[in-house]
Image (cartoon, rainbow, N blue to C red; front, side, top):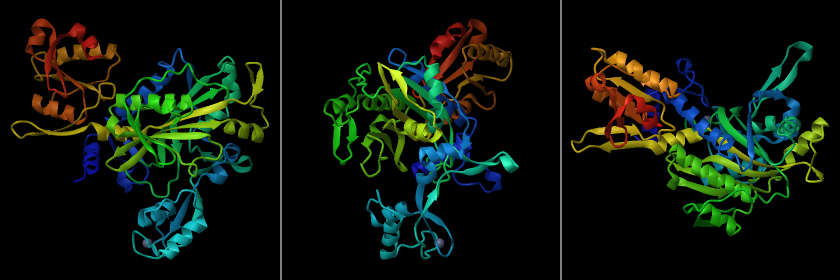
Length: 486
Ligand SMILES: [Zn+2]
């Protein structure tokens, strides 16, 4: 069994994530987060939320907004999504199975299809006589397929075409005029939005890596185009793999990459470094992270520069955040289409602000956390232990176990749960089975701390706190529990 198969198996059994709609045969591209996974996902979101809303205080102000996931066609015409947000699709003549044409060609011919059009792809497929992966049948011509979910808003004569948003960012841009007023007309400022987006992917796969409904956290950093971002401090971090647009790889720190002019824009360097640190804090293996600059052919024409943080997973390379200098393209497009000017007056000049966009996936980092934290180990007796070494900030719960389900221990456990409740911590109570089995179950879902209430607790009001990774146990007074686990 491959590592990612083991992870999916345990993820299903322990309520981390599993296919949606299972009793109706499932539908690819949709996953449920279970009782454990939902907590992990919320913790991933919260780490990002706090990192911008709280921890940037002093550098720039960042606010959070929450917009609808559906909007009228005008928005997506202006943004360019109606025309351009598409993939190349090719279908089997026999079984009608659809494939992403560029992926099919890249996998079979081991070449890059960046910048190729439908005709070029059709030509390559015909000349190389590529066949359907499923049934071996011949393939039709390649065509463009829009990835947005189209729908209708309102009934009858009032009916308008709507789309489910393929990204959160546009709903932030269209509210810019109001956000400028609310932020007291000062640059720079950031707007974070965490929420669902939708893409009708041709062939969703790899569990929660490519979903049709997925979560994002996008931060739009509105700036003066003359801003050099000196107030954003780059730390002296460890060296990491940094690949520029010409595939030149350097093993240097992000700060050094900025100093050498590899990552020219200081804000981009800053948000890349910040993101890498956030991912490590979530429990993602930092040694498997790399920075990659988009090539000229894959970058949107209006973007001055785009970089991704990628994780080398068992499933292949996964992009987990993209940081892009989008200039004033989006605001200008919306100004032109809506006839509402987006110009502001700042520093004695009138201009449309620039935007640095930091776009995190949520589901992908969750997968990377789960894969990075998966541990198989054997003790001296040869007993296997499989667990997730989630950091406490990601860990779904704190477990509370009475040693026995009798003689006042469950009642005393209730007191401990009250302490955790007051501290805003998620407790998970379990009194069934041997204490060893309960520890094993807690390990399997990556609980960092397990608290046990025993007969000594009744005498001196202390409990045992067990640390998952080391299995070390320490006695802590109930009054000091909050401090100990925090
Ligand atoms: Zn076929």
